[in-house]
Length: 216
Image (tube, rainbow, N blue to C red; front, side):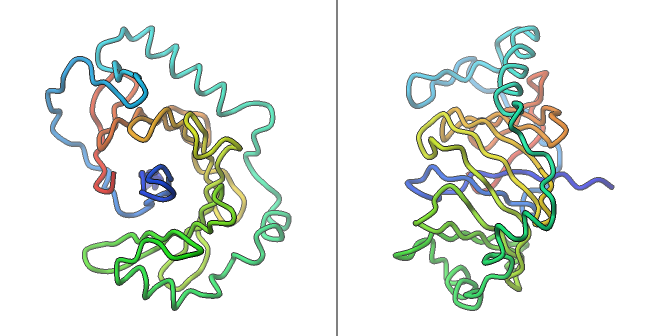
């Protein structure tokens, strides 16, 4: 069964960072709730995904797809080149300290931002964002082995910005266009539209609620 990676908002860097919880959010359908027809976002943005026409939604989807997947998009790095570029991060050299900090709910140190992902009470993975390179987030399994990397656009953390996530073998997993802390448009590596996130809820291209997340 195909495993789909779900990117979840984390409070990394001024509560605006992003990282991927690739195991925490279950892909179960949820009961669709009634929401206001217009939800005002920070910066005078309005979440109107439920109210605009299908033609308008399709136009928005195409617009951000074109911005995310331009001619410079790398879908698959050469594994050797990718691993050489991140050779110092393939194994978390400080993983025991990071593991203990995350287990003790420490989210920030002088040099890094941290976040853990759990299944029940079991820590299954954690993320590290170094303050000397805020545009990259590293995701490790519980033994400190690199699993994923998030790469943010140059204007991060100023909205709007974009993010692309790669596996440790250099293959693209997903791409997200961040309108604000509350709202994002998510696409899979094949450019297929995954959904529009608003806070803890994701809506598909037809404005049907399909997912929720627990760490917004």
